[in-house]
Length: 340
Image 1 (spheres, rainbow, N blue to C red):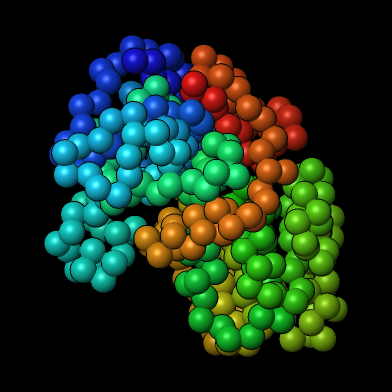
Image 2: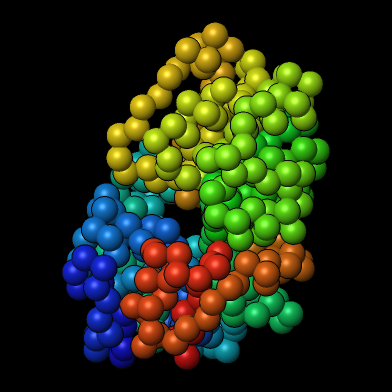
């Protein structure tokens, strides 16, 4: 079968690889669509923490079940599905708490333990497979995974008030977070991004205001809109050098800062505000199963994310798909690769 493989720095090759053989508790999925994610860019650029070339791209997926193992009972051949793309060891302290996302021994697509999703056929344990509603397209089904990242990021927050949220960086995950926050009832949502198209998308998705952090005084605007109180929650979805300092400056006393972005370089952080205002900071690593289920339910129940699908390219043009996102060659939120 065909697969899109990162073979070197910013180099993708379409290769022939073996079709997966499924285990008794697995299903085989004919892949229809796969999404290009920011973590795929890390692999593409050679900065990913544990995925190194050569590696098959992808972990966002939708497709059709074409074969089932003998122990599979909840899905059948012909079902349209998406996949929660991580498998915990099942025995560590984190798996026992349902925290497969931070299992030290979890398997994820695109690693030696599990093939990536930019392939014609993908195997997955039945427990990770979720049926798509008839009204949900393959492209929308592919977005369950990134939406789950946003669901988890907001679920990690413990602040009780939803008066004001600031999102630094409204690319794919920032926009997904905006949508989830809107659904949760945040009253004022302030988005920031240096890209005009991203700010435009944020306003269309429910932001109160969208600011350019290179031009606008973000802190001043936050204080203006909150009566000098500051934001209850700030989500960091980008990796600019001053972004943590700016996030803290915009956060109220006893407010929270959630970091979603995988910042792979050292950046300075002036932490006086964090101490003076007794703020809390947390990381949000992918999602727990309950977050994935919530995202799946939101999309199956009609949440419209179609405007976020800005490009669709065939598997043969995976190199171009990565280049578009990496180089921002076009207005882009989510690039979908159509496998079959």
